[in-house]
Length: 364
Image (cartoon, rainbow, N blue to C red; front, side, top):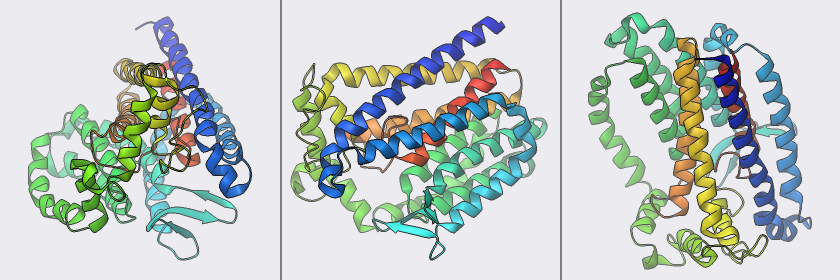
């Protein structure tokens, strides 16, 4: 692998990320302006907050690029501990902030953040370090397989308790993929899968709002004003956009029809305003981003870099896939934002840091 090749990949990674972030800035304003004016009498309320988060993310990304990612190997355990403590803080009265029945936010003074986003990146860093150290006995159940799985399971269970099934399932999938890439015997997972089946049955079938989501997914037209409302409005947005779209700012579904238009369902507004051309462009950009991330992982000079790059790009790719799949009705509704595009400060900042780590790995 030549230095020129890595710099070329870095160059394209920056271009694709910049394109996605730029689309996000435009679409956050377009999709939120009416709602922001109705709620705050300021149509640019969410845009201004999104730009502040973007600037913070850019500053931290530049700082991350300047560091040597290999120094993170000395801080994997403290970062894992921070991830766990952050998730625990979300349950502390006065610190944890509840919204929509979920305790997913921590507010200290005037500063608020979503600890699950930090936990995701910190767990990936920890797993990358642990899997590099355990390469000699990675196929050993007790010494190679269980410690990383136990760490991942602890973080995932805390996220699940918030409750946030979408983020928990995504992070668990990332952890398993990293274990598989490291050479772990995935057959060891079979007993855990068997044990977890009753738990998943309880978490989905026995929890009313999740069961309504499943019913709404299977037959949204059976409850057009209830469980099926959100996905039907998403269908209407995507369908009315046609090939070329209605034009930027011309969405009708964002006029208080489609809930969370600037967060979880921003892809639907993109489809309505820019049409099939716009949505396919987003998909292509994410495919290129994932391909570049995988190439950086394959060509990394050390195992820590390989596993770290793989975890970061799989995490971003899975979140993008789930968000787009939800918007198009391919899977039941999950509360995951579209990376770099949806409104959401913590997610945007952490994704930008993730890309900065990829650039760091590519350049070393």
